[in-house]
Image (cartoon, rainbow, N blue to C red):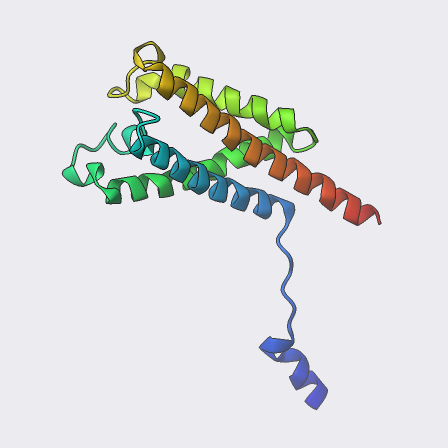
Length: 167
C-alpha cells in the first residue's frame, strides 16, 4: 500500500520531454519575438523606416496607442504568434534539409512574400519601390537572419533527434 502511495506523488513523476514539433513551434515564437525586437531597435535608430507595428497595427487600427511603446510591444507579441505558423511551414516543408542555406533562402522568400505579395493587405505601407535603400537592405538582412534562425534550428533539432534515436 505504501509503495502505491509513493508512486502517485507529484514529485516522483517525470515530465515527458517536448517533441520535435513543439520545440519547432517554440523556436518560431522565440524567433519572431527576437527578430522583431531587433527590427524595432533598428527602426528606433533609423536603420529602417518601418517596424512591425506599421504592418500589424497601423494597417487596421489608427488609435493613438499604436504609435507608443505599447503598440510596439503588442506588435512584437503578434509577430511571435504569427511566427509559430512560419515555423510550422518550415517544419512541414524543409525540416529534413540539413543546410544553413535552406534557412537563408527561406528568409529571402519570406521577404519577397511580405514586401511584394502581401503589400495590398497593408494599404498604408509603401511599396518596395517607394522605400529607401537603407530600409530595403536592413529588412532584407533581418529576414535572412530570421529565416536562418528558424530554419537551421528546426533542421538541426530534427537531425539531432534522429541521431539520438538511432543510438
